Image (cartoon, rainbow, N blue to C red):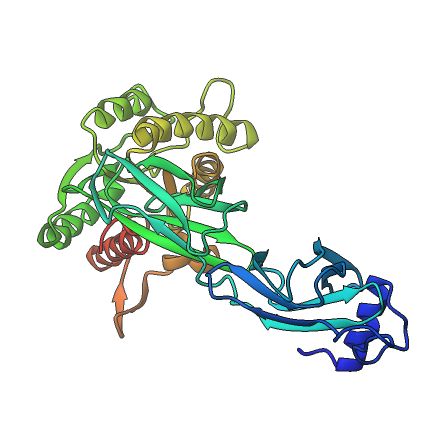
Length: 405
């Protein structure tokens, strides 16, 4: 948007103390020629001003702002007719249209206008494109304008995890540890500009598919479909076990043993055999859910290994009927509660929405353009077609979260 010449002159007079009726630059009688002012940007990031004025006569140069105020640039008494101010003002992200006025005490003035580039391409990130998983990744935030002074919001986003953000000055250096395989994203943002850089943390991905009998069949499909992608899949199904029945298997201790094998990814499907009282808390009230979430949270922390493992915990689809319905709702509520405090390491995959939307049980659904039976006759477990779909959802999530390409 350009200002009308009369409005600009009036504003210049208000800011610089010139007479309001001075529509055009003019000199008083007997004075030398009025000043001339031009603006250009031969150097990236900076505005250059050229002043032509009478030597020995004081000149005040200011930038006119949209709010009607003036920002001083320089006050000088030229020793010669032509004066160059090489770095008169830096480019700015919040101000692209620039208006400058040179005013002489006798009331004469000169104007210069310039439009500077936007900040859209101002930033760049220098970092390696590939590193070995587990290694540190150094990076530098580059200011293409070479001005500096500002701070950008820089976020490092691990594969699947939430971003870790900080403020970093332009030109600054930092580093992060690429703890697990996948694409790590570095994003830098300032008002009007942003940039992004991806770092691939390499290494063969190992996946642990574990849980109770609910994980069976799903683990077979994961092995079959991920082997061509170079993913090593290990299955550990513990039938008839549950978090609320540690007498058969203490899952908190078992999680620590499994985590010692250092998997990159854990896929968990567990809870169909739960519902047992924990301490004084019978299933499936608030106290029971709170205790189940506490135990689950400990397992998630063990599997997460301080950010080195990404975990996917599958929610239990609504069963056909019986006491399972109340238990499954309580288990799912506890898993959600636990995962909410472990976002760096855990994502919940909601199979309730997929197989039983709205909590309504169904034996069949449309899969791949045809109607398929997705539940076994017990009304609890997934059928072969259902397990195939669940494995497909897991793999799709691995790709979406940039662990797999």
